[in-house]
Length: 158
Image (cartoon, rainbow, N blue to C red):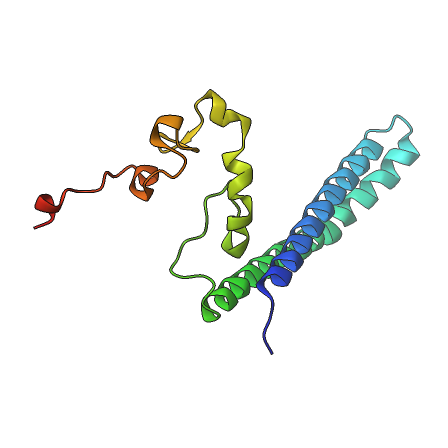
């Protein structure tokens, strides 16, 4: 059964979002419990301390393990997506993609967005080379210009 890498990445992203939400919920609940332990009412403070102790020893670490497990599963799904791309011939080598382009097979979909970025007009570049060729280079600049390496003369290659 062939697995679609795009679907795997979608599931991985959903797991990461769920882990982030669980972490935020965990921290908000912990802060709320601390607030109860600071109550001026001695009875409320005592109940808050009991709940806080149980939370700290049992529930807080367990929710942390669940969130970590979700992130680990997301990493496994991303690794499976890479393996599926490589086995299908859609991805070669170890390139993970430039961070702003995304990763894997999705990176090519973002190239035009990056090239159209308004920062290009203000000199934004990658490794010192402009995102778009200048008018003097013509619309179709030689690929070596975009890599920053001039094409060698034939007499230099010998």
